[in-house]
Length: 257
Image 1 (cartoon, rainbow, N blue to C red):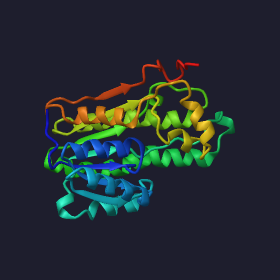
Image 2: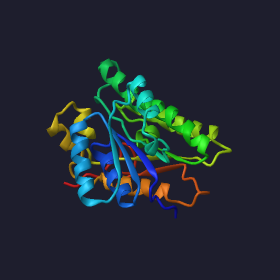
Image 3: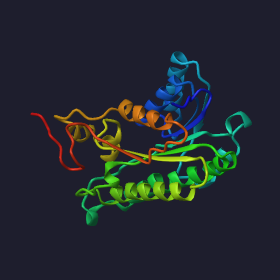
């Protein structure tokens, strides 16, 4: 088992959900955290909580992963003590809308493609060269069961997560010959702000997604990510698909009355 003591971990989308859970788990493991999120106020609340509970160093960034110029400048201008990133967790992502393809809002498509695909590409492109030069590092991409199984009205969201799957596999192939590890962690139903964001703040509709089901929690996913990055250096966990017991596929869900 690899120690994370003083390893520098960059987590995107860190202000809530799986990203915030990862911050807690990795802080507990002794890692140094670079936490990035659009909602800086939420991020600062998390930092305060982490500082109370863990003796870890934290560098926080207000960052919209969709902005190529900002991503490039933020990564290139990290202070020297923070510049050698050991682990990149590409967690920033979202879903917008649940309509039939021909009825969907094109702006929702743009937001999903820009965040889920392009944002992940930008961060990876600017972080991985440093890993290659140091011949160490680990990239963890948060995918989804939606990248493996398309479901009705999921069209473009499923397409973005299928892209994450392909990008992860391609990165692993291109890094062959280095010591860098690449992992995709692909959850099914996780109770986060995901559905609330998908339904543009409709909390009642979002609650129905998890009705009668015991979904995964962000902590469940963070625990799996922590397991992946702490395996012996010669072990690469390529892909993990995890779902709650109440879920058998993207569309097969056992809802208790």
